[in-house]
Length: 81
Image (cartoon, rainbow, N blue to C red):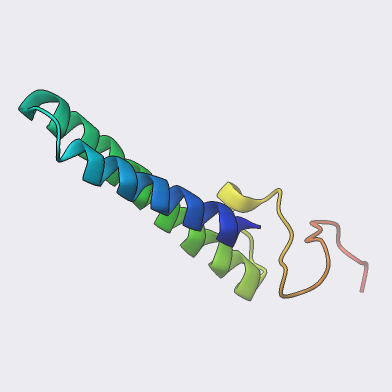
């Protein structure tokens, strides 16, 4: 799930960045900054989600989602072993 959302956000950020390049100077800079911010946030979200999924150590940004590679929901409850 986080992979899909991250890729969609990355594509939208890129579209905003490219479309802003066609505008006037003041709006161009603002649009490019917003586009870059969205792209960076999408990449960081993807990296954090992938790291959580692979290590199962957890990431506070992605704590609500389960790891699709593990096939089960990530629980913070100790099994008592």
